Length: 459
Image 1 (tube, rainbow, N blue to C red):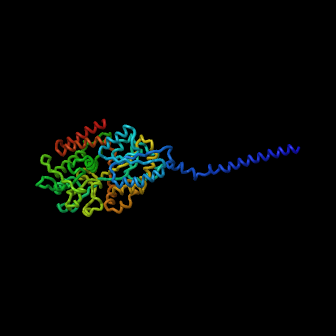
Image 2 (image 1 turned 45 degrees about the vertical axis):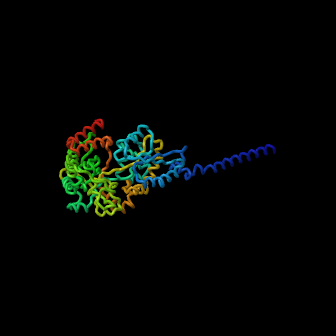
């Protein structure tokens, strides 16, 4: 009897010990299932976890200032690499010279940089080869996207984000008021075609000894020929022109297109004279063509410049006390749909569809395009940030940039949505070259562009 009781008691003790052990195990394991504080970062910021193997995020940038590259390498890339153990960021610097061949090579091979620096019009050219980044950069994934202004449209294709815009760099009309007044022009920047033609004849000066210009009234991008396809588009858009018809075919046979080409020719002739007796171009100067030469204090020769801020004098130059900034006004007397325009260029960074690092690329873009970073990036270039909330500090402290930002907001027209832009550029430059040499009439120039561009589009 005692032996049975002893055996029973032993079994009870053993069961009790097992139950206690199970309870202890359950109590110890509970925090692992009820402690989101340690698990959340892995789900909220997976990019901070070390990748399975070393990864290089490759970024291809074009023609940025040394200050820009130095800042990216000293601030942005180290911060990104610290947050993403095992990842190295590699920046390659390229040039806008020969960009089309370089980019075509990347996309044909299906290999190259993860992030590529593109120009405004290239969303339609390369859109099908770029990654849909909506799931990484759309508002549901990154609320900051709502802070980007109209430039964001340049970074889309087929309605989907393909990357992010860096800056807005519109083409303004910068004019030297002191030279205008000295030449007897007191009505400010010309506001229609007739005024511009008169202005060109009145303010351009020729050295009879050398038969070349010493002062040029208007320098539209290309001072030597005045035939530039981007300036043509600026003038065309100011008349209310549309690049494509409703059926998608080019619109170079429109009245607005003919008036634009005629304007280019008349301005060229008013400045240089007829092609058969054309005078020589301005001599090369130091710095901006509307500035003064530091060594001689002589003017570089330009009265008005139709270009972006890149070609204008540095903001700390004393000449700014005599420079105005305006849009191009069109020709309202002859085209009622005319409107003041600044043609806005927006460089942007796109993610290639072949990239195996799309999520990492998005994380780098978020860091480099934060409110503070987009401000700093553009400060290195004295340009207007693409993010509206980044337009503070140096932007508002500079009278020039403040004016430029206001004009861009009010009159900006995007240089985007151009199909086969590289081919159109070649077609237009060739035809406009024959316009200024008077090998072709304005009607023949437009017909040539229309025909060749239709062929390039496969229409």
